[in-house]
Amino acid sequence: MTRLLFWIALFILAWWLWRKATRPARPATKATGDERATPMVRCTQCGVHVPQGDALQDEQNWYCSRAHLEQDRSTRGR
Image (cartoon, rainbow, N blue to C red; front, top):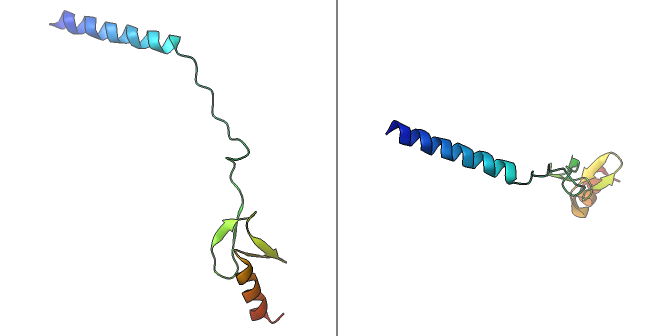
């Protein structure tokens, strides 16, 4: 019984090594321009974080929408 288990283990090991040697190497995954993290900014009015590319800026303040920009401007008395 021990011999049988030895031969089975040896066969599995040989098969695994053969498969590993014959498979093409996996290419390393690299981040492309689309997968990079975009900077996030916080809306001054509601506190929601939005990507900087989608946010609206007024001086040093960032807003998630035109409505919040207008609302903050009217609150500050501009």
